[in-house]
Length: 107
Image (cartoon, rainbow, N blue to C red; front, side):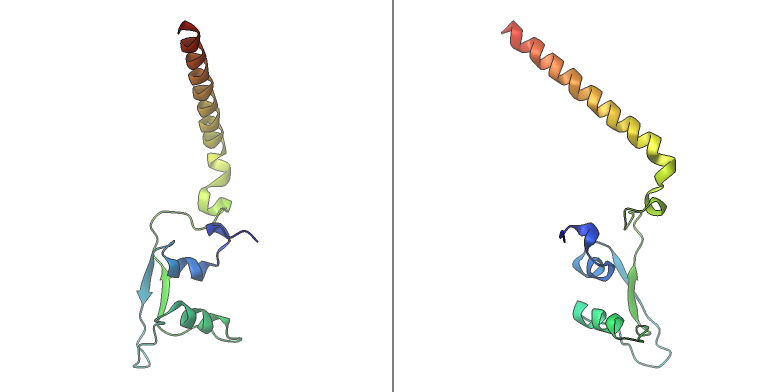
């Protein structure tokens, strides 16, 4: 499997700094059990039947979509905009090539 950012598990991206995170504390039982390392955090969530601890790490929303799905990136609504951007970029590149060729002939 490819080792790109989009294929990393969500919890790993929280710990490696790809995504911003914030600590959420719930000291109802009197103790802070916030995981200190990624290994501790992953162990809490990988234990069968475990629902995590009262203190945990959450995504701090910075306005950047965390996955490539249409819900995060407004898929259908922005399709026309993305297509127009690609077309504009192709036309700009073609114009630059024409200018470069015309300048080469004049030399």
